[in-house]
Length: 486
Image (cartoon, rainbow, N blue to C red; front, side, top):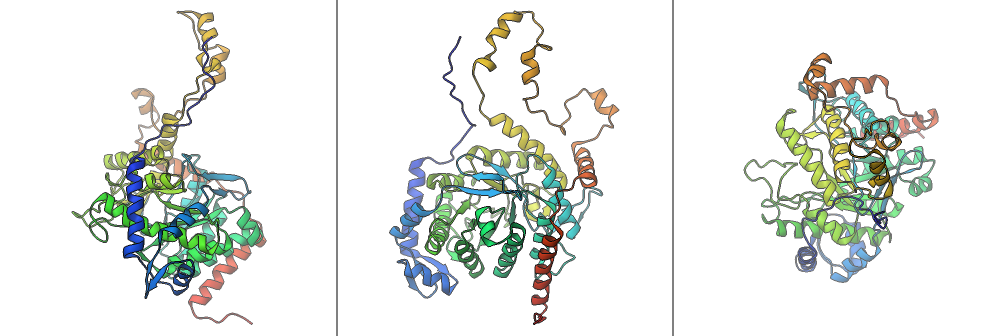
């Protein structure tokens, strides 16, 4: 019998940059932080950084190397998100990759009409329902910005919809600090209190930071607030190479990394051990031909993820997106490539599945198609188990050169293990025609209608639903200038 020593490969990996390149970018980052500094647009954040050893000159803050080294030693290498039942659902470290949607698309590619239109709150509910149902989608985001609610506090309505229509982990985005605080309050109402939510966080905030060298006030306020509570956060400064950063990948990444380290330092000064995820996309040249913030560009693929791996920090990646406007060949290529690169580079929490047109359009059909693509990619990159059972030497010897394996117990034990898509057509032409001759786009639309007609997640208790609704009503009254009741 052949001995395999029971060694197993977990998955296929690839590093865009090696240790030497990452080390050079890290050293450049330290020089940028000490020599040039970062504009920090929040007084409280500046005071915290200064108390920790940084030099301040107005809004400009210069951070010495020892502060970065200390913060990196304190920052957790693991970030865990739970589902609503307090079961670990996302273990964001190493080469574990989880996929989910994006947020705030201004348009929807309607699966019923094929037309582009403005989304409403029901589209957010539908998107959350689809993501909750799809087996390869691990977390939920709002996907759409609803046009039929108050645009000043649209994120509160998104959060209410997500909490009511999924049990999966949630990544939320808020345009202001107050929205972040309201979202956390809603989560605490679901969890049964602040400490219960801290122990089993099922939602985390995606913090958009202006750029690597400019930290806006809202982002800094969110960072401080979440760190004080001991809650995980996704601290994401992004650069546009050739616009607000050097056009070269190395220069763009180094200056973006300075902003990433600023968030790591600030969070650890507020509360040592605060979980922070770092970006897994951008950090490369902008498309200066179109001046559009494209979601799938070749040169940036894997660069920031390599830096995240260098530091051993959780990585918030991007994949399953396209800059195409319709479900065409460009869509298929860019979605597959972006999902694949995120997977093999080891991004941990990969968002924006279903994004189109540089993030201006979302598609439920694309999410359904991407769900199948993710399943295929996970099967294509997972390790191959090689042991006595899988080598099946006794079975081969038993059946010989002309044996029929179809009804053998070994086949019956293993035939369900390979990945076979429920959406991709693999049968003969005649059978495809008999079933209606549907394109993949049409098949995906059919799946959406079936899911929306049948799928419901476990409902929240009435008292919890009322508490969440009360927070949204309070926020609406606040933004309308209505004083709270005595």
